[in-house]
Amino acid sequence: MEDATVFESDGPVVFPLEEIEEATGYFDESKIIGEGGYGKVYFGVLGKKEVAIKKMRSNKCKEFFAELKVELLGYASGDDHLYLVYEYVQNGSLSEHLHDPLLKGHQPLSWTARTQIALDTAKGIEYIHDHTKARYVHRDIKTSNILLDEGLRAKVADFGLAKLVGRTNEEDIIATRLVGTPGYLPPESVQELQVTHKTDVFAFGVVLGELITGQRALFRDHREPAKMKSLITVIKKVFHDDHPELALGAITDPSLQGTYPIEEIFKMAEISEWCLSEEAVGRPEMREIVVHLSQIVTNSTEWEAQLGGNSQVFSGLFNGR
Image (cartoon, rainbow, N blue to C red; front, side):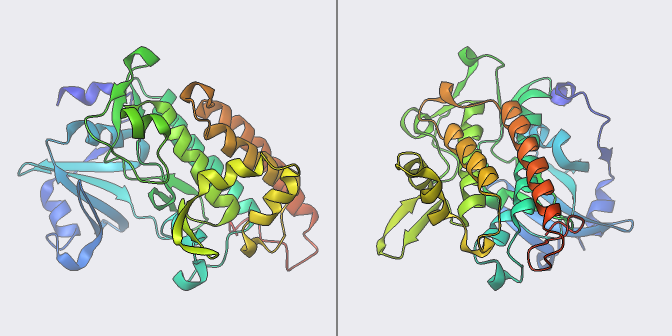
């Protein structure tokens, strides 16, 4: 596969196909833990390590290489399929931890945990935008594609829609069909099928909105249950209000129980609005977002440490919550 030179990589491990088959019980249906347009994901054990193995058609070559550097442990190939081996992430998706977490067996995320998840995710997206030889666009950034490990550290997942784009805006691609998830798509993708790295930045702005509000990207307003409401509109409305801090307080996730530093949550909301700019050129680069979020994490951690004497508020800096 000639595209392998795209990445400056230590190289994932190449597994014999037989090992992959044995690890998954020969792709036993009971081992399926996920399924999408690009293939099924199976739970398996290689050696003593729990892994997730995606089985996908080998003609999905670009999608395969978009996955190579970000979270891949290894791969095998054979019978017209590629088998991608990942670390098995035990704690599920960010979506499960934000939306009705108690129903899914999770405690609500603390403010400090949310800031770290935001930073981890931003760094993951920044990597494929800026630190591979070719620039990739993920095209499906959303909370269900952000996975959390035992310590609630985040990993960006599911690069099934990833595409190569040029380093300059002149080489941005026009998609042949609308891809991505409703509620996360920028105007240019919907109207002109235009895809740039700023497509991911826009979607990340929605993710930040979800971390702040606990709402889904599209949700039903309890006052008008027949209508779907967009989180994009909700975030933008805050900054059109005469008292934006009060407006932000009114939409902040109730599960935080008012326990957060208002200055830092306001800064995160400002980043979210910046990412959600109508014009792609008005949105920040992911590397700029990483710098801002790093400061928010530092400030929030210091704020939480000062509350260490209050056991109800102190979320524990070591276990993530």
